[in-house]
Length: 131
Length: 131
DNA sequence: GAAACGTATACCTATATGGGAATATGTCAA
DNA sequence: TTGACATATTCCCATATAGGTATACGTTTC
Image 1 (tube, chains in turn red, blue, brown, orange):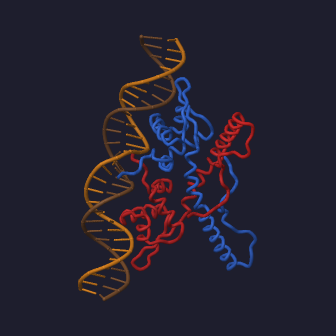
Image 2 (cartoon, rainbow over the protein chains, first blue to last red):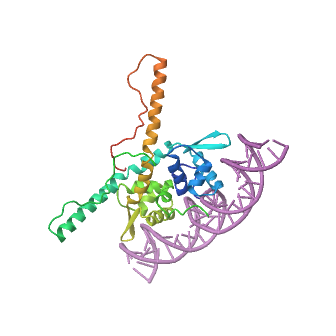
Image 3 (cartoon, chains in turn brown, red, blue, green):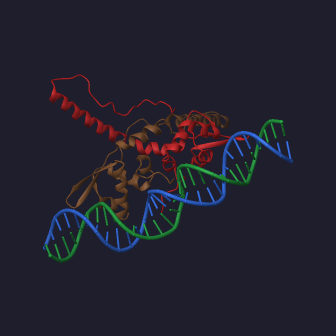
């Protein structure tokens, strides 16, 4: 068997960095194909093909406006990715916490005392929008 | 050009559902190859190949123990995925909020008044571990 | 040493990808 | 109608994938 089709699910569709860039652009608002072409500096047929994949997995919706086609983001199919990966979030923050402990020990061995230390990698809880 | 290699980054490595299953298993603790083979009911060479991909993107570490090889999860390469997809979280919750508004209007049109309503799809903020 | 076990690799196949070039389809303007 | 514009599709290619089968490698046990 070959690799699963890119249109199988959002996991596969989003594995392509160019498609993630397209979604990043659309997070700001509706765009026509040519807008995306100009901003990404990618050939137009390629953009159309990527948009087709995104449409087949439901990540974008289309709307006709004259001779242009306006694409809009539909973020809902990203939720399974978020749910899956979020389950691992605590694991890597624990890992960084252990790193903090090791760093603290190293610093105490080398000198007498310091103020702050840390990796700054603990999970952020503030929700800033896409863009 | 063909599709990017599965070993390019975590996005590509994780697009394969079998590899996500392996990571789910390893989230509980270290496992030997045969343990994974038995729990997933997949041919051993296939498991080894998936583990190789996961190792090349840094998602697992290996440790030799006699004639067995114990694999352990390293969740850190998942962080870029989490960071990217989290930026869209607010967008789909807004979408569900608008759905709530529509539902509320429909209910008010059909009857006089109700108590609670909602989709229950707002993002959860409690951090439960993988498993 | 030989045999059994645990794992990794090599080889094969069918599949479908991302990109490029050319072209088809559809819409507006003169 | 003719042409310009906006987008989608088709054909081509090189690539590498997931899975299967067979086998090589390394370790333990006899």
